[in-house]
Image 1 (cartoon, rainbow, N blue to C red):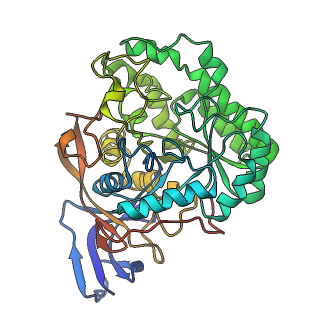
Image 2: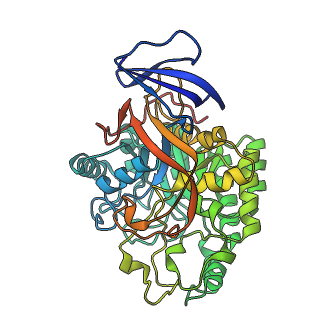
Image 3: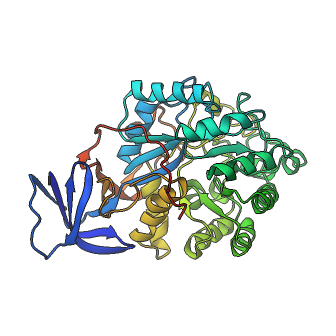
Length: 445
């Protein structure tokens, strides 16, 4: 073994246990009691009393934007931010880059851009399902994408249009044949078209422009299509807690549906968003405190499976901070580096544990996307670790973040929990990273 990590607190098997973890050839080869016979290795790392060994996080919802919009974010900066936040694997979304990942040629272009940029953590890719690319899905699947993303309303970029309702059944049927996964931005276009338009500096007006019913109706549509086609579906960035009963009922009926939410929906509340502060704008929007608590209840009850960043940055000028207009500003929140402490700050107040965090932010994202050998400290998995100090507090300094632009709604917030070191296959990051592909036989969990 090259490395043994010894810690009084290791998150493994949904518990906090005292373990020594042995690493050889980048894989975990032993997980043994700390008070047992010492494992022998070339190097031994003993964690400090205030540190916990977590599995490396898996963030399956990241907009890297390279190539084409690398001035917004790129693979070099995004993966450095991920590593600093305890994330060892990210899966890149198919849009905001140019070209979008809607055929094999575009996937090849993106993979080359990632390889040339230099990676600090492992990276995989989602494909896109857009009007007219049904015939491209099989090729993308065989090339190793982890699934396919679609929008049910305009995405915000013209090169990635929404999937029309009359094309959704055929796409789902093809995805079912492939044994793949459809991940859905679920907001109903008609509901939003009939809502007051987003405009001006008042956050309450922006919130009214993206009502909960837009999510609720779109999720119901997705459930109906999944029930008919038999396809696996995943609801992205759930912000409306009103949709949880429908998701729960669909699962009872045998529909294969999972759901994620994001740190900003669990940390912030609409009542606290200052008017004119467009760094808080995202779609779907941050909702009220009572809704936030019901999302936490959904995590506790297992109705929400995972927490991922939906890291979607842009250049600061596109946030229109000078005007503070929520109608014209780009919608997306930069949080890739801060997800773990943001969630832990709120979770510990509600009685949740570090094993809960590891399940929501590592194991379940890896299982849902089908990312092999990631998300848990167990024999056979990659030796991806996050050394976490759960009691240490810090104040967010945007200039210290590794994101391309120092713009985040978490600026100056006091968070609890710091990432001391991140290990990728047993090596501190930045370490030799890989481009990942889907492997057959991976369960959705």
